[in-house]
Length: 268
Image 1 (cartoon, rainbow, N blue to C red):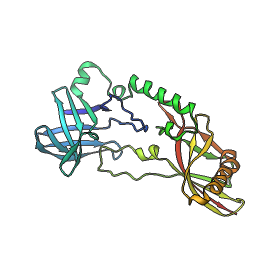
Image 2 (image 1 turned 60 degrees about the vertical axis):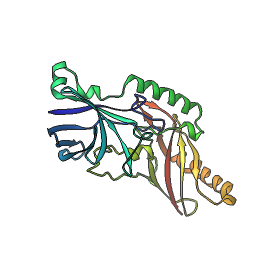
Image 3 (image 1 turned 120 degrees about the horizontal axis):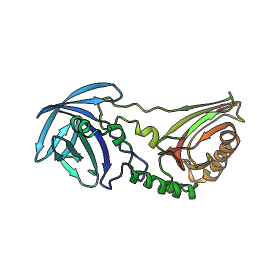
Image 4 (image 1 turned 90 degrees about the vertical axis):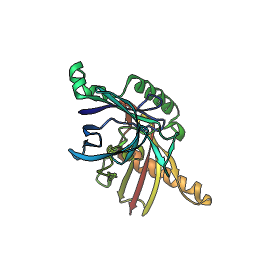
């Protein structure tokens, strides 16, 4: 029997959490028998074979992850993803679910699985409300959240180069095939030639829905905090906002304030 995952959601019924992390349905699988299955990896474009280990009751280990089977029928399956540490299930972190339909059922009902995989109307209302709050408070870090389509930085001049850092994925971790760290914790390396002096700083900024930057986090000894703040705000004003095209991050097409990490190196 062949199934496709059409929905992955939290206990709230939403695909997004407060930090902006999105649960994305990605699995396609063949049930070969009671103790094995094939799962399609969307990035490697191949099916991997995995054994199914039954632990107790309705708890199984599938593709190196613990799951509780909540619903089983020839038309649909629902799994609860379990967070297990030292053979104990954490109720607080076992809060995500995967829903599958059989291809036979979808064909019979003329349903398009790709349409079913899209975020729900509830997700849209949730992101609209979070975006409105973040944009009312563009300088407040606690109101910002990760943009599903992160900030885009492009240099206007040859003296400044921007590189968005990539995250290496585990090809066998089928529950985290999307590069979530790239949008949850986006990092950019920026080099500036012909700067006023040599410097190398790492810090984070809040980018609002209009593409304006505000200094957020940086690390320095307390006695140097104010002087470092002035230096970093000067770099933002003189170089970054002046010589970068800054496209704000968006989620479900909605621009909103989000935080990004910058590693800025200047050479005189």
